Amino acid sequence: MVDGGFTEHIARYRTVREQIERAALPLATSVDGRTFELQASLHDLALRRGGYVVLETERGSWLGQITELSSRSVRADIPSIGSSTSTVLVRLAVGEGLLLDGGVPVHDARVRPARPEEVDRWFARSRPDRAQLTVGELLLAPGVPAVLDSGGLNRHTFMCGQSGSGKTYSLGLLLERVLSETELRVVVLDPNSDYVGLGRVRAGADPTLVARYEGVPGQVAVWGTGPDAHRELRVRFAELTSSAQAAILGLDPIRDRDEYAVLADLLRATEQGRPLISGPHELMQSESPTARQLGMRAANLGVLDWGVWARDHPSLLEDLRSPSSRCTVVDLGSLGTMEEQRLVAEAVLSTLWNLRHSRTPCLVVIDEAHNICAADPSGLVSRLSTERAVQIAAEGRKFGLYLLVSTQRPNKVHENVVSQCDNLLLMRMNSEADLADLERLFSFVPAGLVAGASSFRMGHALVGGKVFPQSGYVRMGERVSEEGGADIPTSWARPRSG
Ligand SMILES: Nc1ncnc2c1ncn2[C@@H]1O[C@H](COP(=O)(O)OP(=O)(O)O)[C@@H](O)[C@H]1O
Ligand SMILES: [Mg+2]
Image 1 (cartoon, rainbow, N blue to C red):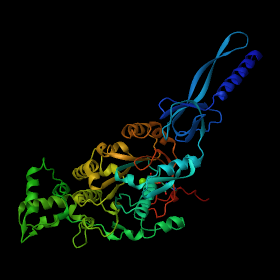
Image 2 (image 1 turned 180 degrees about the vertical axis):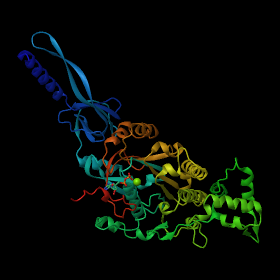
Image 3 (image 1 turned 120 degrees about the vertical axis):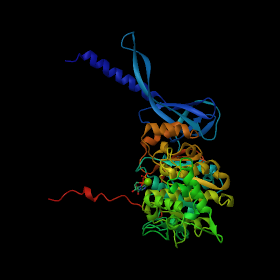
Image 4 (image 1 turned 180 degrees about the horizontal axis):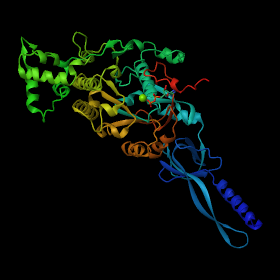
C-alpha cells in the first residue's frame, strides 16, 4: 500500500509544477530588433512554428513569425513542506522568430497570435506591383491568400517533397497561374505524362478560376505519342548536337575517339549542300564500311527501332526554334524507351540553350529532375543533359532561361543545379538527412521552417525565396486544369465478396 504522506507529496508536487508552468506568460525578447526569442506555457499553447504573432509593448506592436518552437525542461526550486526546498522540473515552450518589419529591441513583450487580417495587411503591403500568382492560402493564417510574385520566377526554383506530398498537383497549379496571369513562355519536360491535361479545364472547377483561364487552353501544345498529344513527339538526328549524336551511338569522345572522329566526319560531309547522312538509318546504307560499322552499332543498340525519329513528321526541336504555342508540354512519358526520353530531354535543353541569344524569357520545367540533371548521371546521354542543365542553372538567367526543377530526391539532383536555385517550394519531407541538406543549401529560409516540413500534410508547402515576401507555410489551393498521369486505381484491394 502506498504511504498516504507520499501520495499527498506527489499531488502537491504536480499542483505546484502546473502552477509554475501556467504562470509562464507568452513573452518575447528581441535584442537586435530583427529576431526574437520567446517562451510560453505549454498549457493552452496557441503559438505554432511558422505561425504569425504580434509582439506588444507600451511602445507599440510588431508583427512577427515564429520560426522555431519546441519544449524545454527547466529546474525550478520551490519552498517545500516545512523549511526545506524542493526542485521541480517544469516544461515550457521556447522558440525563436523574426520581426517582419524590423522593430526596435524589446524586452518581455507580450506575444499573441496575429489575427488573419493583420497578416493579410502585411502581405498586401509587401506585394510588388506585378502579376500575382494566388496559389492557395497561408496555412497558419486561414483565409489569407498565398500570393507568389510572378517576377520572382526570373530566378531558378527548386521544388521537392516525398512521393505523394502533392508536388505534381502543386506544380501544375503553379503553371496554371503562370499561364493565366503572365505572358511567360513555358516548356515542360514531363516524364510521367502528368501535365498533358494543362490545356483542359476540369469539370467542376471554380468558375472564377475558369474565367481567368480563358484563352490558356489554346496556348498549350502537348507533344507526345499518346491519346493526349496534339503533336507527334519527334526529333531529327541531324538537329542534335554532335555530342548527343555520338552519345546515342554509345561513343565517348575520349574513350572511343577514333570512331567518334569518323562519325563527326560522316556527319559533316555534304553533297550539293545537303548532308550525306542525316540519320542513323542511312549509316547502314552507306558505301563506306566504317559508316556501316557505325550503323551496325546503332542497330545493336536498338537506336534504329526508336519511334522518336522524325522522318517526315515535324520536329519538336524545330518548333522550339519558332514556337507555334506558348506552352510546350513534352510528354516524355509517352515515349517507348528510357533512352528516347533521355535523348529528347537532352535535345530540348540543348536547343533552348542554343537559342539563348534570342533572349526570350522561358520557364523550363524539369519534373523528376533526378533523372535529367542527376547528381551521378548514368550513361552518356544523361551526362550531357546534366551538363546542359548545370550550364543553364549557372548562366541561363541572364538570357531569360529560368529553371523550375522538381524532385523527391534532393540529393540525387546535381548540386550545381540545386545551389543555383533562389526559390524553394518544399512539400512534405520525412527524411532528416534530406531536410538537413536543404537547410544547408537554402540558407535564406529559416532552418526551423525547413524542419517543420516533416509534419506537413498533402498539399502543404513551405515557400521561400524571391517569389514570396517572407518564407512561410502555404496550403495549396484548387486546380483548374485536369491532372494527367492519375494513380493506378486500387481496385485490387477491394474486399472479396462472400
Ligand atoms: N492540394 C491538393 N488538393 C487535392 N488533392 C491533391 C492535392 N495535392 C495532391 N493531391 C492529390 O494527391 C495525390 C498525390 O499528389 P501528387 O501531386 O501526385 O504527389 P507527388 O507528385 O508529390 O507524388 C494525387 O492524386 C493528387 O490529385
Ligand atoms: Mg509527382
